[in-house]
Each structure stands twice: as structure tokens, then as C-alpha cells.
Length: 251
Image (cartoon, rainbow, N blue to C red; front, side):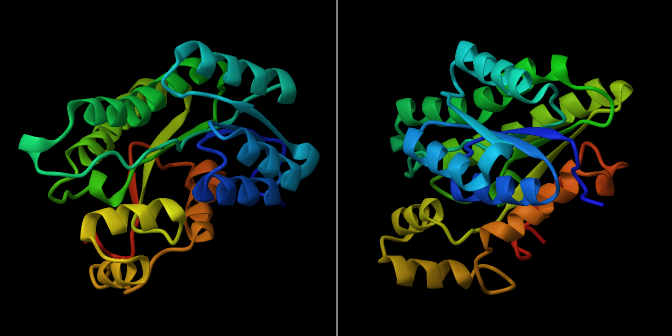
């Protein structure tokens, strides 16, 4: 039996590589999926690929009214909401703390932390027992690195949000967890690596491979399979947990 049969999910950052890989995996397991994100062409293309089991809406996750509208539309379209994936993110700026741009710091916190908070705030009233909330953090939500004050701070803050919600929602049998990907082979990561190293794409990727015990980047579908685990009854006794899918970087 499909592990997510008859369940409905909303995924922010739904047009990105991890968001779409997760949507594909959810649909393959029987779910319907609502994609929320900023790129109208990307959302349209993603929903067209998934067919009648998907819907979409352009959504700024830092705007409370926009997030509420997306959640309400998902519930109206599918009649229920069982899985919430707060996946929207930006890389933010890089630089030493004394020079770190304040507007970039604020924006990074807004997208990752406020965005996850607003999605949970508006989705939770629609959830019933057995529902699952997944927040996409990062390996640097478990560790840290120089010159990424905005991104690392935001990813650690998401863990605090997750743990609060896991405790708050446990009496309702709603599970909340964070997932912590390491470097993933996608455009987002390539841009991060080039900015961090000052090297070209291939050279930067090789430098990062050297930091990963498994000595390679993850594929988006590998992150998606972990998402399915957290969304399904396979993880029915798992809440308040930080799941590292990072090739051993945080070990």
C-alpha cells in the first residue's frame, strides 16, 4: 500500500529541486500536493508534471496573508491537510560578522524562520491526529561555519521552532521534525559553494566533496526519500527530532 495514500501535503519552496523531488515522491506514495513558492513558471511546470494530484499558488512565505491564502486554498482544493513541509529558503549573504549586511541578515531570518513559523501557524488549525510537520533546516543547523551568520543562525532557529511545536502538538498526536540536508547537487548549492570558495563551479564542488565523509553531494531524491519517511507512518513515534541527511558531515 502507498505510504501516503489519501493524504494532502503543502510544500513551500515547492518549485525548487528539493521541493519538487519531495512532491514527486509524495505523489508516488499516493498523496496530493500543493506547491507554494515565488516562481510562477516553476510552480506551473511542477504542477503540470504532477498532473491532477497537484495544485499551486505563488506565495511569499514572509507575508502572513499570503501564507494563509495558500493554506486555505490547499484545504479547499483537497479537503484536508495532513503533511506540512516548510522548505522555502535563500542562501543569504556571506562575510565576516563585522561586515555582514544587516538587511541580508534580516531577510534570511525572515524567509527561513518567519516563513516556517507562518506556515505552521496557519496550517496547524487544519491538522488532525497523525499529521506531520517537516521543517527543512541544514547541516549548518547542527554545526556551523565561518561567514554565514544569517543562514546558520536561521537554520539553528528552525530547530528551536521545531522543538517548541513538537512539545506543543504532541497531545494532538501531530509530529514535528527538522530535516538537515548536507550539500545537494542543485543550482542553489552551486551558488553557495562558488560564493564560499571563490572557485568555479566544478572546483568548488570538489572542495565541498572533500568536506563530506561520503565524498559526494546528495541527490535531491535522496532528501525526498527522507521526507517521505518523516511524513509517513514509518516515523509514527518520531517527533522533536533532527534528522541529518548529510553524508556524515555533522558526525
